[in-house]
Picture 1 (cartoon, helix red, strand yellow):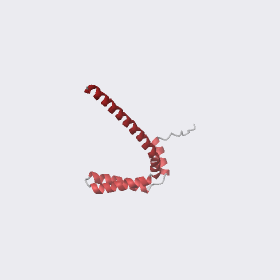
Picture 2 (cartoon, one colour):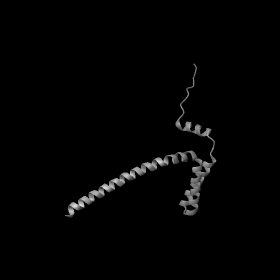
Picture 3 (cartoon, helix red, strand yellow):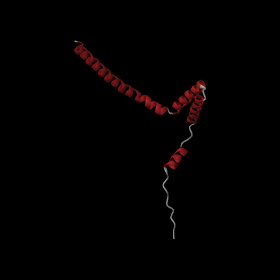
Picture 4 (tube, helix red, strand yellow):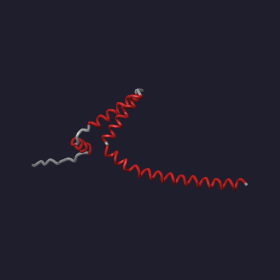
Length: 111
């Protein structure tokens, strides 16, 4: 009798681990993570200034490591600002309408 080994499908975790093995280690990301963790620990232990400095440097390093993501966010920023401006204009129009209704009601009830 011949035994044929059947390949078993990889689970998700094994597939992700293999993907991570192919990527080189980003030392900037490691240092940024360490700085953020150290900043958090310092903040929890009550050393506010040192914690803020460590957290700020970790955030700056993380932004350097994720330069492409940051650029895409900055490219989308004007679109969001335009949308927020449109929303604020709608709110301003609604407030003016409510004010006009208030004045009309005040005139009617003031007589």
